[in-house]
Figure (cartoon, rainbow, N blue to C red):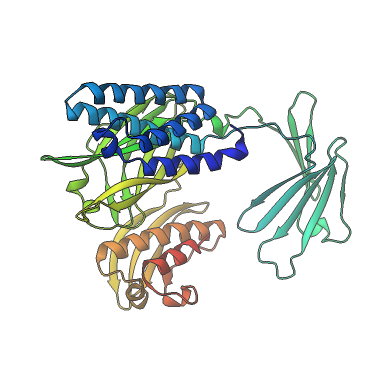
Length: 433
């Protein structure tokens, strides 16, 4: 399967999966429409991975064998569920798998982008020249520095038509030896520093990656449950795995002990959905979350969005997997809430502490009552969650800018033409970068 063809096959596979009428197939294992859809999925899976295609073929054969010979409806349905769960899991794995293909020699221009709070950077390889363009974010005139480096000799020049490099850059030089080692030389005034860059640091590709998939529902006299398969699709072991459900102003964690997963291994976990608000109430920003460590004691966090879908009767919700977010490394900067939100005149505010270069500092973050009303946060839990999220983003931003101060969010900070409610809150929160 070619990389450029994968998205269309993933899209087609999801459409085929959603259209399979499993009840009809259980009633009639020779039902042609469903068999045709599964046969097409076998072809797609075989194109992606021969083994996956053959495994789906085996599961279909196993289902048909039991459906044609057995009178046990429970066994037949279990075989059908195994097949559907396999299809769902393989579609998700196909979706996130990166197919690496060699770069065409005819391709002579590759563009990459990078940015932080202050600068944007774009590089492009054109023939033997590496072009690097650097500009300040928010510059009204769009001024930028255009540096050109010969990719063979390393000779550097700059474009006279653009901003002079001295206005944005110090003199930075990197030398790459024949053995692959990189030497960085940085000059600031008369001070020069040199260092070897470690090119052998463990790649992000080697981290353990936990991927939640295979979500299925089961209901009975003991309640309704969602079963989720957590699989380690990374290259290293994941240790001390803690998982749970998290949404805006909602969190659930199991009572089970943490577990570990070797690469390629998986574990099915259980969420008692009928015991939780999620069963009957729509909750925004619902995710299944996982926090875990690698063998070097680095801590990772990853999540996958979950969509609440009402069953046909409309009496309760079930869950369907959404967007997956790759792992990020957690670093403790000491940011903590040290007092619950309290009412203070025209606002509700809380006190936080954070580690800075000058030591531990405290700061108060609050919401004005008019903003709370506009956002529709009509209980203390919603207000607290909003303060926590806004504070964590704003405080870290202020520390980076060395400008740590108390702050009260008000309606003046909402975007123009907003309609209030939770959507306005999301825009406010996401504007803090």
